[in-house]
Length: 389
Image 1: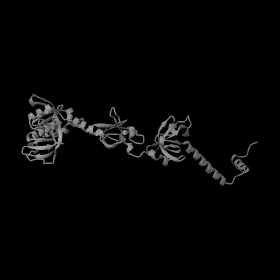
Image 2: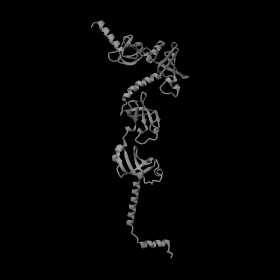
Image 3: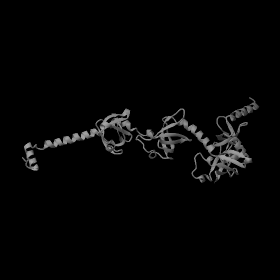
Image 4: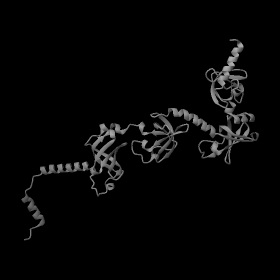
């Protein structure tokens, strides 16, 4: 192949490579060479892009990069190869570039100077812009002054009157970033995965947890602990960072169900070895039902005293005999770990005590010499006095 043909092939390859990117797209690459006016950036594969040396210098004119360094820049042209710019990432330098950024939807850097009515005054490349209050962040800001003096990246959403009327949005870029992050995060959200998230809000039925990029899952109250949870705010609080396990991901809605108790040992896994029929245990009354009384024997392990085993007459007040929160002694009647069921009896405890008292009484009676009825009768007459005829 002759030299002109080689040049044409190289240009054609660069043109094909450039079409893989879009104007306004932010990409990363590695500096491979630095020339007099431009630097060459490897953007993957056989593709190279160019960027002006001036854009790689700091405010003092000192070059900030060297071959091998990675940079982030915006694609400003794909004609005849890729041309990159960092000004539109780090802050536009002129009104013309602001107009170009508006047309291409490119991000620009600006400083929030002060809060004004309905939003903020933002300074971008020496031009004054306005950012509505709703567009400064993805979440509501309690203190508007918190953004003053901050340097953010914005998108120009309105550019009118030759730049005299500029409206910008930071929220638009944040939401795009969140969607990009969310797409990557969702790939890791599969049943069984253990992830770290931040509690967004706490409700009576559970808590919503942000897993990153705005992707939220629900930690239902029933999955917070092996024990019955009556107050979710006692388990988690807004802003708290917690580790959870992914239980389910619905195919259609992409709703994510999370679990907290699954990261600790299930108390029922050791029930078969720690509970035996006939064993006497002490538990705490957790709730009452028409068919019996529920008793927590240990956190996450609750048994049932059927009504017939409460030892309370049908017409009696069960709630008075078994106040919720009180301790109660029971006998284990049945253990079924696979069904997560333990049947208990309070009546058996009373029966045992009665039998024990009878045994003790019998032993005492056997140890005392028996008195005849005559002797006993004489003592009674002595107490009651002579019988009248």
